[in-house]
Image (cartoon, rainbow, N blue to C red):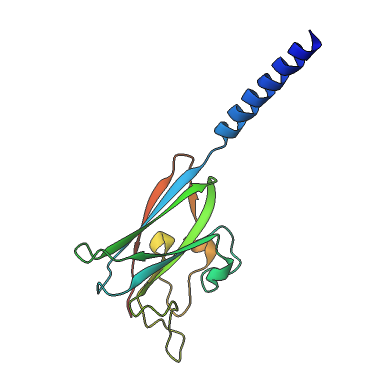
Length: 150
């Protein structure tokens, strides 16, 4: 009798635990980068969940990826699945020569196309996390970033 009750309790706990795990919300973020001026190379996309490192130190990003350019559409897309709803910011650059780096001139101005979520285009400095942040809701979201070439 007690063994059966113990087994029944274990099954109830297991099913309840699975229900709680299934209830954990995961959102998907799609980043569309448009305005790519050449089909060569790839687009680097960095997703940040905090201001630290944004936008220059992508080693502190929550996730990073290099995505191919669609030569006909002159755009690239990155998908980040399984994210918790919340605030994020994205920085991108067109790595047309596949160096993996955003080269700049003597004054720190990027030599490659670059951009930020919210399409922030500050002059003489990089975007700040607070300017580029957006809310990722529970069902997910698609954002569009226009590349800036100087």
